[in-house]
Image (tube, rainbow, N blue to C red; front, side):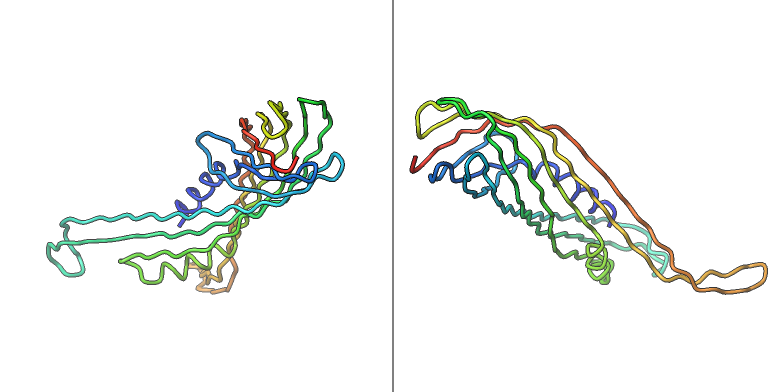
Length: 223
């Protein structure tokens, strides 16, 4: 279960890169950011020098682990063959809200600042041939996991003509992973035999702040 949480966390670091589409000067622009990253699409509308926008990305993770061979079974008291299978299916969505501000708007050059915030939503299923209860444990675990991301950056676009520009952006990405779990336990003092009920809890918090850079090709329609 802990391995699954770690894999999910680091996959999401790559997922916060995106392409975007937005409305500028009452026209639609479609922007593509090439490279090794997961791309999404966002839509917005320019109000003077501001562009509020929304975005939605999705990602599916399917993994399978199998193990087979021969071993000694202490319960059966003999050598047996075994075939074990473990699968994970995870669906994630990343709704985002953001704002761009253009502080330089020359004829061919436009410079801007960009900020956005996202919350990761996910659900999934786990199957383990050796543990039928693993999926119910997994469902309980992901209810306590909270993942938030955001980024702040600056960029610029150079217009080749009214319908096409080449842009670049650099900034800092922030990812926060929080997990909390608790369970009821019974604690016994071996010296006195006294037994008491208690609640044991575990909390995990991970913050990741990598920098990012990207190049974009922007196609404008309706300008």
